[in-house]
Amino acid sequence: MKLFRKILVANRGEIAVRIIRACKELGVKTVAVYSDVDRESLHTKIADESICVGPASTAQSYNNIPSILTAAEITDSEAIHPGYGFLSENPHFAEACLTSGITFIGPSAESIRLGGDKAKARQVMKRRGVPVVPGSDGPVVSEEAALKTAKRIGFPVIIKASAGGGGRGMRIVRAEEELEKLYFMAQREALTAFGNGELYVEKFIPEMRHIEVQILADTKGNIIHLGERDCSIQRRHQKLIEESPSPVASEKFRKKIGEYAVKAARAVKYKNAGTIEFIVDTEGNIYFMEMNTRLQVEHPVTEFVSGVDIVKEQIRIAAGFPLELKQTKIKISGHSIECRINAEDPERFIPCPGKITFLALPGGPGVRVDTAAYNGCVIPSHYDSLVAKLIVHGKDRAEAIMKMKRALDEFIIEGIKTTIPFHKKVLNDPDFFNGNFNTGFVEKMNAPAEPVNR
Ligand code: MV4
Image: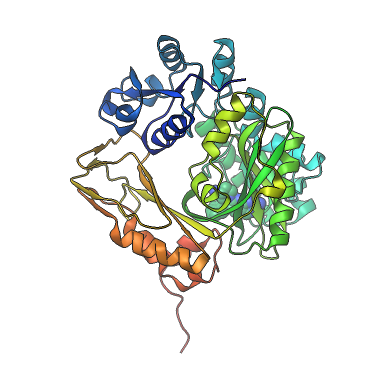
């Protein structure tokens, strides 16, 4: 068996750069694809070859299946790495690659489809013995069925879209009287956003933590996990800061959540790298939430604490190699934190694209910056506003926080507004320092202080 000769990277920005780096270290040739506005982007400059796939509009370039496949054929690429976003979780694309004789570096179309059907995934996991939040068995077929489930499990409940993600088509229902209205609101929103109005119901877990587990599964049936990431620092369902280990994870907790994740992956015959997302309640109970069938933005925190290059593993797995890593050999050491630095107004989180007139990156021991930015580059308005991921690794959480603070201080980005000031504020928050947070943290931090009775 041999690795690929040439891989086409069907993405842009920092993740395209990240994937090209892995290919180069494996001795694999790379092809970058770019849209008209990305001609000067870093990924096109560092790849062995680059090819234009269309105009700025993602539908006509990075999401254009015929265009991407044609680029792969013209360049004689053997495999395609989709990165995250764009075509990474498009089952039609995974199938089209297969049909074209090109290896899709990721799971099967069938796994992608299941990952995209949250109600079905929940049902499958429950049947296979992975704990899920009390709720409907698969989708609910009507508002009457939703009400029946809600009465069985008790209010408050949360109605979610089967095709959901990003919080759209989601409604918290606190009492019976509100259910009908909120059910139809969620349905309409889901239909508009995803073209699919299917819904399911879960017990609402207040003050939940979002904790997810990175897994690797080869084509021979070997499955391992690389520990958890705590992604509870989010705003409007956009993750802002991630860390590994979770501040609430003991060795015992990691073993348990890791076993659930491996069981979940095994239940669906998962292949390649994936993430199993869990809800953890204030008592430490763990419930399956969703399965992400792609490389994730926050994968570097896991790479720091596990010492595993997840992108290289994805490529080896796709080429048919068995995992060399054994679960018993995986040791989680130290603590890693990632801050997502976006070209946004840090107060209002509205996109702020433009030209970077001066850039100085932080460095030093235990500091990693994943970015496609360079002095004088332009952040186009057409795509995601992520400019850089700043990731640190310390011997423990306190050291990681100190490193992150000093690295944020060193980071100079002029010409555009970024979320660096937001991150500095969080890193100085005593509740953050104490690991005392949940998915409500950012909203609470931005809210005015509680009035004090005098
Ligand atoms: C939940 C939840 C409480 N209980 N699920 C799912 C997607 C993620 N971005 C937020 N999600 C939630 N799922 C159960 N069973 C709470 C959230 C949640 C949330 C929900 C509605 C509005 C704002 C929210 C903020 C953080 C977490």
